[in-house]
Length: 192
Image (tube, rainbow, N blue to C red; front, top):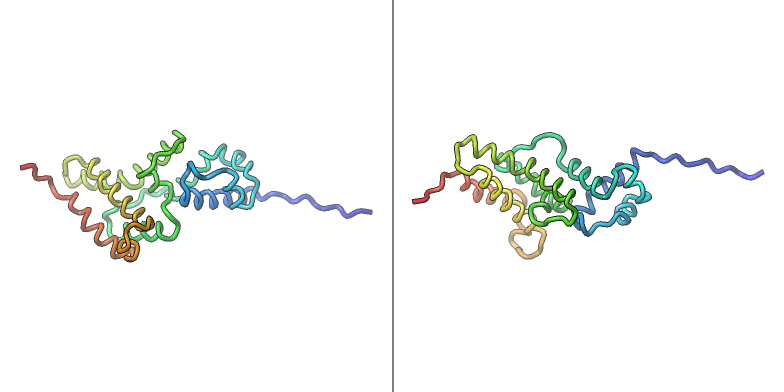
């Protein structure tokens, strides 16, 4: 009599989590467009076809990774003490996630681009816009977008290899100097 091998039940929640974790890492390292479904499945150790089952598509997984990266809570603005240091530390440890990448690179997939842009606006631009508007400053959205663009460039520049002193500086030093730089956006513009 032969031995019957019991069917292994797939742990759906674990597979979903593995796919999401692998996708988050790969999207941060390579971006949406240069990451394949096959690579995500390989890194997760699961069948890449499960992406379609659990997330609908690579774009659906990307959107889930965006939400997982940022969470549901509205974060404090960039100029709140400690916020930049935490973000710079996260970028140093895990790479520039999809939200930061949306600030400097458009995606080929319109749905992925729209989702990344919406997260960028909600998580980084909008809290600063509210801050600047509360201070009665003119063009609060422009000021907020300038601040986020500058910060994203600094955060991404740390890992690009083009700026030695920036790469060697600790997150606290970079954050303090960046905060000092961006605080100029809180001053009224003298057009005289």
